[in-house]
Length: 336
Image 1 (tube, helix red, strand yellow):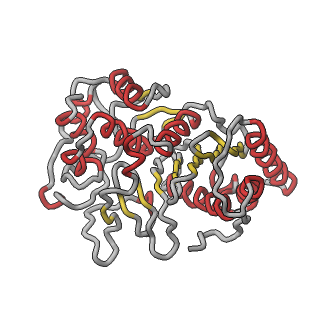
Image 2: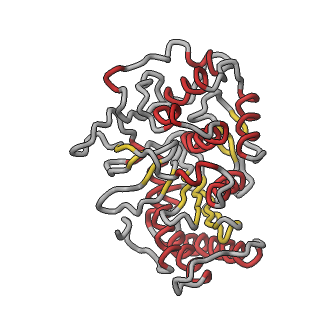
């Protein structure tokens, strides 16, 4: 890309972000820490426009948004023909956060659900490819419902935990995509989610706008999972000393994150900020900060990029740092 092209993208992001801040209709409850909303918007926008982790050459075209429980406070579109707030996309593993929240809305006592939602149930033979033969949750499980006793009680990143839970605990075995969508929209508040494959852990089709509304409902306490962020977390990095995880995905690289109820806790001891997130394999990265005040989304969809979710997280968390501190982030890894 030419220097002029890069400048144009930066200006585009800045203009849209400031427009969302000024005209989004939100009454922000910004913490009284001496950092103004204008400081936050400026720092986040400049980080999007200048940090190598957030460049078009690294991520391609994308949409980003940051807000609080009252609504979106800033947003921007980066690259050529980028998605927008209303663009429907496959969110892949960001579906997991939605499913966990839905389960907790159904079950005030979710004790028996925990092992399926923090991926310690031992059902690790399903895999993570969002592909099914047949039309129902049960049909998708055929030949993929194996239980691994050696992984029982240990974290293993596999969509089988939620697939078996949906079929055998929730009674959704006969559900097709439409039925799963109806359940999700009933429990989470009719946000317009749909399913493109009958997998609770990977099959949701959503717009950034709808996902942002979900995150706001976590922040404002409408959804029970909002009070359980980070609860029941288990170590998830199988190469880390003292961690008994059975399988760790490439979506967290070599970092020492933990896994809670359908979401990650970014607890790496060197660079983690303890935010809650649920990166999807196509690059959709939603998050809530550790202070449970702000949410953010970096939205894109790719089917060819390995570790796309982690790459989006590498940018998204730097934008989060800029927002929280009111300072442009030029480093390519977070400052603890």
